[in-house]
Amino acid sequence: MPDSALDKKDFILLSLLQQDCTLSLQALADAVHLTTTPCWKRLKRLEDEGYIRGRVALLDADKLALSLTAFMLIKTQQHSSSWYQQFVEVVKAMPEVMGCYRMAGEYDYLLRVQVADMKTYDAFYKRLVNGVPGLLDVTSSFAMEEIKYTTALPLS
Image 1: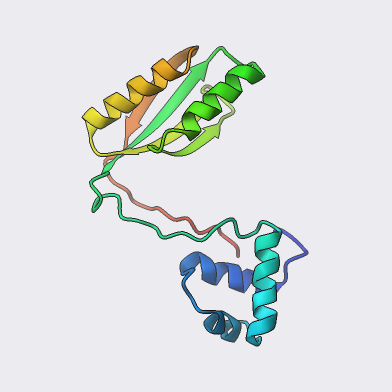
Image 2: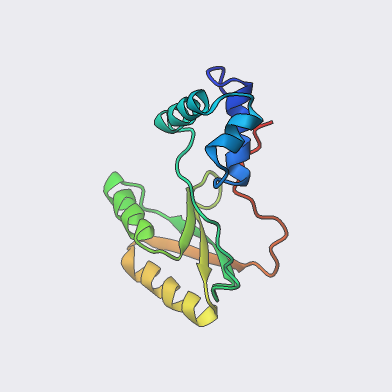
């Protein structure tokens, strides 16, 4: 267990919410053998302490005509805090960026980008490289098939 402050009931609640955040308070309480009030207090504590960051609906990218997933590997020679802040601001403002990671190794950053098609990706690419000075190398790979995708953390 990652944190001793959490007990088995907390982990069960977190696991259930990862699978379906629309479960009723009664269903959650029943699953952990509590009444609704103590269950609600646990959920509130988990939210207040940041274990639960949000509750969302997962959408189908293909049905929404956003079927191209690109992974961008970025190298830069810029490592100042002001450059980093600018890079972060630009990336956070781009809704196509689904994930951004600062990396160890050959590349400095990894972006997961979701767009409609190659033409849309090209426009995104141009906005990114023109919006952030000092990008040394930008390499893109494109997903041909999604084999596994989950937002559920491995709690057990």
